[in-house]
Length: 208
Image (cartoon, rainbow, N blue to C red):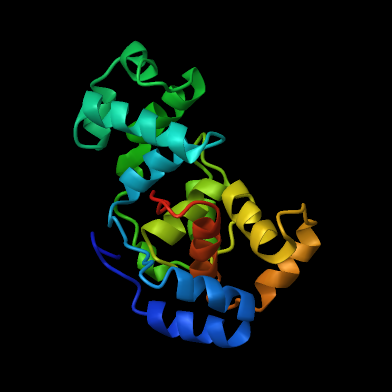
């Protein structure tokens, strides 16, 4: 599994191939030439951060995350379980999200010994969505930000959709079919293209 600080070995190759296939994306790649995807090397950390980021803005998620980190210290199951529901809610978490992160913390022993690198993307998604509160988008954030899988296209991610609409359609709404058509030319490097779509909306790096 990718370690903390690892950058995908495919990153430079993907940038070259995407630039050759897609003139619009090529301009973004040139504009954000120093953009990199860096693994945290920590599945649990990314999973909890993704739960916090569900259905709220990047800015709001960052604020809640800072409060949670201050309250529990290192993001590990035991530290989360050592805090009461009220303490976790006071960090800005909804009641449901507190239930989710406590449930995930209680179940984590069952997940910590899987050989993730031997599983394909869909197998990993199926494993994670068995956890309460984890949907496909959350599992895809793990595939992108911790496992560094190269061809993930999180169609449920609002930021990515807005990036595509801004870049390819002057900010006007697009249908899912139109969005998928654009993404077809990005294969097998849709993870990389997605990172640039996020940058098109907000230059502040997305982190999970």
